[in-house]
Image 1 (cartoon, helix red, strand yellow):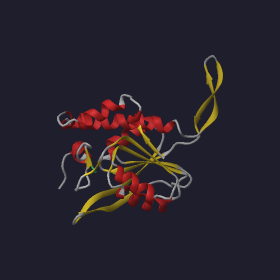
Image 2: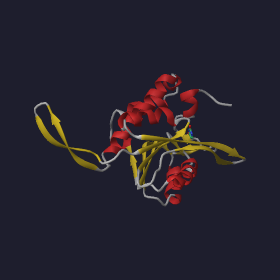
Image 3: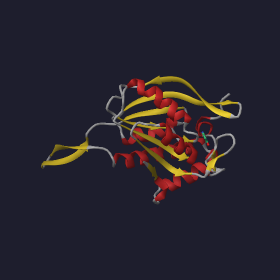
Image 4: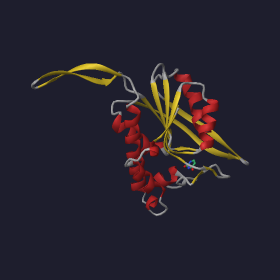
Length: 214
Ligand code: URA
């Protein structure tokens, strides 16, 4: 299943506009803050699809039944651009456990490959897992990450959360991922360029958050 936030208008459009804007995006603090805010609203949308259980709350004046999350999802951040995005998720799911994956793109001649270096997560068995990675370009780092994550347990459902996605990445994930999953994105853009960057996209999200790396 694919859910695209900007198919219905909301303030998320403003966050994405500023993140894409050639001048505004140069303000790193603003870029990170918009990514965080987008994470918080996307997490809210995901929360509407989760399971809830009845609980009784006692107020100073009486008691009532309310519906609360049956359990917290587990957030998994793919370093490094996911850090501000997952901060937003953590604002919404403020009691969630968080795992980390170090996976980044490497150019192999004409091809874009993935370097996988690090993983630290709790058990994922029977859990709802939200994998947070702002730029869903080729989809290869997500698939490589999930293949490793499955060594830490089989989730009941995987949500893949992106700020911007390319159709090529969505197709790749749909073909390769056999586990029950939903892909969420702020916007679905036109295509990848020859360097596998999303067009029109916003550029390199990691660099925009934290500066260029060697
Ligand atoms: N990663 C990014 O940061 N930007 C893209 O367009 C694709 C991958």
